[in-house]
Length: 447
Image (cartoon, rainbow, N blue to C red; front, side, top):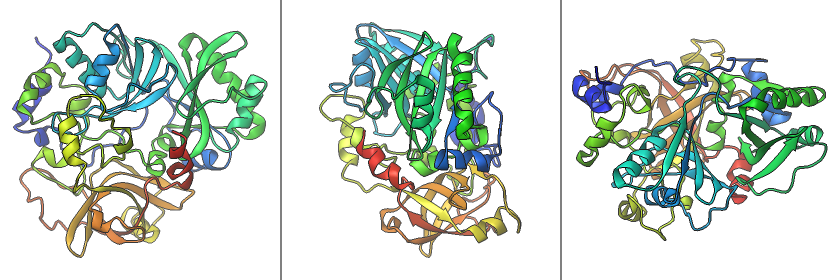
């Protein structure tokens, strides 16, 4: 029996929305690692006030791209500048459709002249591999799925450990016996620990200084134990799956935008190529914002804050559409700070709601009606409330603007999208995105 494709799933459901809409869907959190080690509040505090260890080894897909046409296929299908892409550097890779909507993003590391590693959720990887095979590029692929979906189980090929927080540099110096070589943001340097070689990627999370250490899995346990032992006097805290999912709401990164692939007739063969039981067919939509038209969920890279990485000095799929979109009008990415009293009343039913995490698309309203849509909401204990990364109409994007978030779950098809379903409202105030000042200023300047 043939494996069902994404297009099979759409045809059977009747529409992309019918396929994807799942009210009250459980939010995604990383696989394999513990949900909490020290409690999500203490874990969040660690990267704000101390030092935190995060294990990224299990939940990311890795795809190695190698061959004479590796750079060409990535440049033809991504907006990034490949004229300035050093070996050892990483970039946020941004592929878009011919209409200028994002497929998704991923972290692309250049490992050699003709070798790259693309990591993250697999939608961007699917996009690149399909077009490489269809276009006859001279390039080969090797993929390592996340641990929850790796065929036959087994260990990942790579370990990834992040060390983050104000004490991160001190911990790293303890482990390696001194400071690492000076490294630009999102560039990596080779490091050695007791004869074990791997790489240190200069990285940051929610505006804090830190590194991501990446190497062969055979060294994973040794490196992990070395960080734990050296970090004990500094109060090192391991971060679990719950807290790990939250720093993006401070740093301004919107994870897993809806891939804009469900409607274009030119992408019919692509939808037949994709498996139904993959990210494109199984990442759910839910929330108080509902539309029968999946295209209402598509986003522009400009809206996600990727305008600076778009390089028009080369030809790529979607270039003409992005040139037009540059003139607007487009929504603005902001952070909504939800009123803590309303959060307790609406989400916590009068009590402390505890940990809140939602990727739901909730309606954002003002007196004039719908003005925006939330993309991710999460408790941030050091802030004392829930923050929501949100796309909002430019007229409501100024710092301090007051809006309301409609907190509820639209049932989906069969109910009017504009029906008054009695959902409660949470007052919210517009603040910049990224919310964290360091992430908004120095963090971006260093890139």
